[in-house]
Length: 116
Image 1 (cartoon, rainbow, N blue to C red):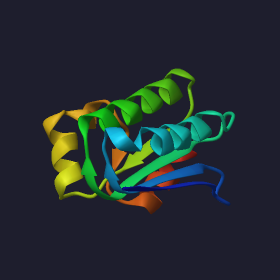
Image 2: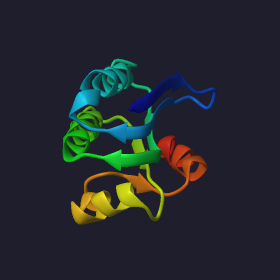
Image 3: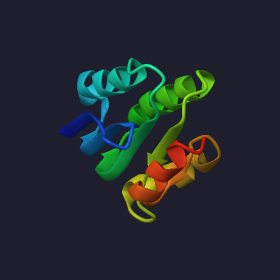
Image 4: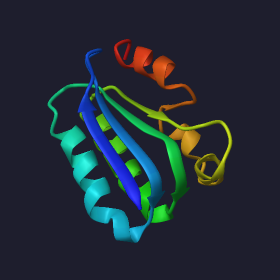
C-alpha cells in the first residue's frame, strides 16, 4: 500500500511524498499525485521517496516520466532518496543518478529548487 501526499509548501514548491510500497496495484494514487504536481504551473517540484520500502520498476517508470516531463518543461525538480535501503538499491541498479536530480536530504534538495 502506498501513502501519497501532494502539498504546496510555503517555500514555493510542490511536495510529492510517496511512502510505503509502490507496485502495479498503486498506479491510480501514484499517477494522480504526479499528475497533480505536473498541473501545478511553473512551480518547482520535490519528489520525496525516503519513506518508500518497495519500489517496483513500474513505479520507477511513472516517476521517471514525470521527472522527464518536468525537465522538458524547464521546471526545477528534485528527487530525494535515502543513501541506503531497497529504493536506493533500485535507483543505483537502474543508474538513475544520471537521469534524476537526486538528493539525500529533503532540506538541501528544496534549497536547490530555486537555484535552478
